[in-house]
Length: 101
Image 1 (spheres, rainbow, N blue to C red):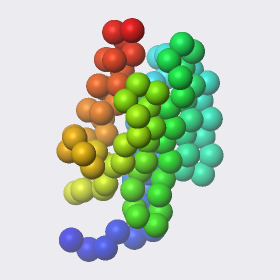
Image 2 (image 1 turned 45 degrees about the vertical axis):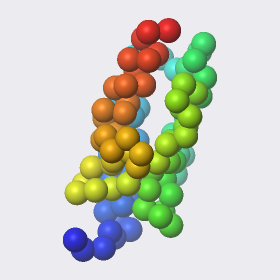
Image 3 (image 1 turned 180 degrees about the vertical axis):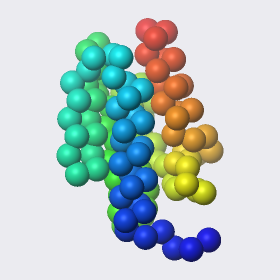
């Protein structure tokens, strides 16, 4: 597999941030995005934080419900480093937890 270029990493981060924003949008939280960092504060739940890590080519996240996590880019998908699930499945699991509160 060819090395990950800076432009491709940036594009993949932008797509991930967009996906996360779209998935959390129905909760009407306070969203803040700046230079590859997304903060989502959900009333009664807490703050989600996602940020790019250019030096390791990772996406890092923090959930008020499940704690910190990291995602590696594998075949153009962000894969959770411990659970081995993709970003969208992780977000869906978080949303299910929110909905069960």
